[in-house]
Image (tube, rainbow over all chains, first blue to last red; front, side):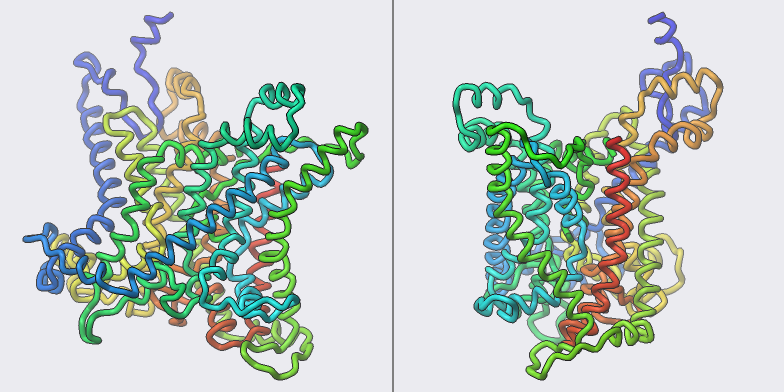
Length: 312
Length: 317
């Protein structure tokens, strides 16, 4: 049986030629060669399609303006010119915006993880009335359109609502609070699934030994949940870091403006200068940390991103 | 909310065991129930204040004439805002633009994503590298990718024109992609397709990888062609993953704001419903009229959310 299976050409998924192992001299044919060439051509096209725009941003950011605003375009910089980066790193508005983004995103993620892990512990490991409905509400909240509550949030931030709150317009606090509208439901949802998948034995043993539910959470489940917390926190961080609509609407100067808004507003030194070199340098600076994080945690992110589709 | 778009979108469907609404019958059970609610309380309060209250308030505002930064008396105007909304040609054209954007970007993403997923769903050297590189467009912030493409679309110095005119000779002369009203929306759709196709491909790839390979082996033995295999085996088995991804992407595309606003601001030829709503609410300060538009968007998205949660529940059973 086993030998038969080895001889029979292995079935490969559609659109894909046979495994390299099966393309032996015996099976070699012209058709397979064409298939193989076509396959690798497709891979090259896919790679160029996904990577070229970011490559182009990098090339543009290190090319001198004389090369940028010249035709035909140069696909490889003739010499490396750091002046765009120097301009961006010396730009107070941009650096302030970068700091704002870090403060806002980190604060949002910390709050979402703290409150989110409490709720997720309850939803994932307790049976109680109202649990199902709470889960459905949380799931729905992860999908609601931000623009639907934009006007009401604007009023609340300016203190125009039920409670006498201070005017938070153009503060980082306002952004952290409003970013919780999407990071908190997301965190609760993902962590709930994470807690649910944990084996129950440890928890039961601890409960039998007389540990209270809070100690079980703090000393047993939370350390076990650490990988899940890291992945969830990273995804929530990316969400907060990339947010644009609220940052655009609730800030108006560099006291609270985030990098996304700063990049969208980036202009040249004079009104006649095309600012694309500087914009690309800023774009690369804002994106590189994300890309590094994503590459470091890629396995976890892939698993987190795709688990829903597999089960659903 | 927006997190659905940028971050990890497809929530894991849960296996919620249906419990009767009867109170727990032991003292320990009752204590655990109380403790559970105590744990949920902070999150619940936050969600109530920053999401549920504003949502309810948006419904209320949509029936009033309230304006931002105005102290005049707020009056109930009934359905006037809604009547005005659906007679506003700009709103109608925003809906048309949004539908076009949603239909074409989700359509292209699905087809391209499927091709890519089928291609990388095989063992070849460098597969990990290809899969990793697909995370790059996903990780780039939408504002950044819009800015990058704005530069690539530049009418004189843009690389898109350079490739199409100078290198491939597909066009005779350079095109002002974003400044030509009829081309701006397709150009923006292309940006969204670029950014989201890899994500779609990864979702479909995950779906493909759970299809057992002996199904294909058996059909190969039976003499099925690759084409037949795709339509009669792969696609039906991939359907659940595909439906979830499609609903999610449709919902996401329907509320598009960032990419359009960064590339074209409030230009009517590319205005989406979310861009229209922000202009009404914030720039024109018409809170009542803008809230009516926000309510319409919310109800449409809600329909998708209901569809999605029903689907998840069906899978549970």
